[in-house]
Image 1 (cartoon, helix red, strand yellow):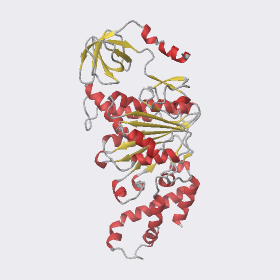
Image 2 (cartoon, one colour; image 1 turned 180 degrees about the vertical axis):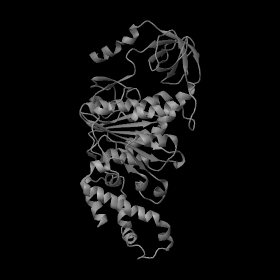
Image 3 (cartoon, rainbow, N blue to C red; image 1 turned 90 degrees about the horizontal axis):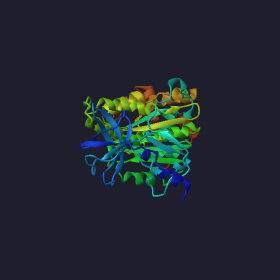
Image 4 (cartoon, rainbow, N blue to C red; image 1 turned 60 degrees about the horizontal axis):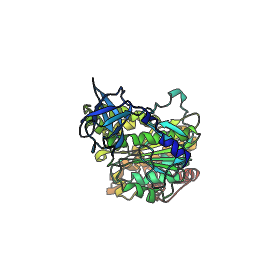
Length: 434
C-alpha cells in the first residue's frame, strides 16, 4: 500500500474522543450540544449507524446549543447522532496534481481519474484578502483573444471583471472563448449552481475537452447550499495557491448570482431577515470577501471574470448592482444584440473597463475613444437612420460614423472558434477608423 494512503487513514480528528450530539433537526439545519465551538468552526457529523458522515459548519450559537448547516442534506440523520470538532478547519489540499482535474467544493475528484497525487500544501478555504498596500498596481494588459474586449474593454492583469447578462444570452460561450484565447498560464473555472448536464457540455463544447493547465471546481444546483457557497471559495483558494507560486492565473466563475442564492438559503434558514428582494445582509457582506481576494501580489496575479445572471435583464438587480460596485469593470451582454445575430453580444456603450487607460498605449486609447464616439452617434440617431429621416450632409461627423458602421460591426463580431492576437486586434482597430 502507498505510504500516502496509509498516512491519510490516520485521521487526527478521530483521536479526539470529545463529541457532542444532535438534539434537533430542521429542514436544512441541525442543532447540537456538548461541544465548545465558535461561529465558522467545521464539525463532522456521524450517524449512530455510521451510515452517514458529513461535514458541517457552525453558523449560530445559542445559550446551550449551536446550529450546524451541513455540506449535504439532512436526510438520514437522527437525534443523538454524534458531532465531532474538525480541528484543522475547512482546508483543501493544493498542488500541481490538481491541473487537468474536475473537483467538487471540498477538493475531492469527481472525474473518475482516481486519487489526486502531487498535492503539497493544505490551504484554508476561508482567508482574508491581501492588505491593500501589498497589492500590485494594475499596469499590464491581460489579452483575452476576444476582439471586442481587447480593443474596447481592455483588461489588466489582476483586474476583477463582471460579465452581466440574462439567461440564454451567451455567458458560457464567451467564458469558453476567454479561457481558450487568454494568455494566463493557469486557469481555474468555478461552475457554481449550474445544471449537472452543463458541466460535461462546457468541457466538451467550450474547452474542446482540453483541460491542460486547467482546474474545474463544480457545485451543481442539486447540491446543498453550503457546497454551492464554498465551491466559489475553494476555486479562489486554488487560484491563490498558484498565484503564490508565481503564475498569472485566470479565475472564471459562473455565477455570482447562484453563489448569492446559496447564501440566501443559508441566511434565511438561520433566522436572518430579508432586506432586498429576499437577500439577507450576509449576502452583501460575502460578495467583497470573495471578490477582493483576486488581484496582483508580489509573486503573481489572479485576473478574475465573474458572471452575474441579471434577473429579467435588469442591471439594477441587487446582486448585479452590488457586484458592479466591487468590480474593476463590467461587460454587459444584451438580448437585443443576440437577436440581431451580433456575437459576442457585448454592448460596448453599457460596458466599461476601469483600467483601460492604464494598460494600453496612448494611441490605442485615442482609437478606443474615437470608435466609442462612432458607436454613440449611431445609437443616438438609430431611429432617424432606420426610417430614412436623416439626410446625408446634415451632420458631417454622423456621415463618417454611418460610413464606418459595417466595418465596425464586422470588427466587433467574432466566431466562437476565432482567436486573435492583441497586436492584430489593435492594428485592425486603427484600420476601422481610417
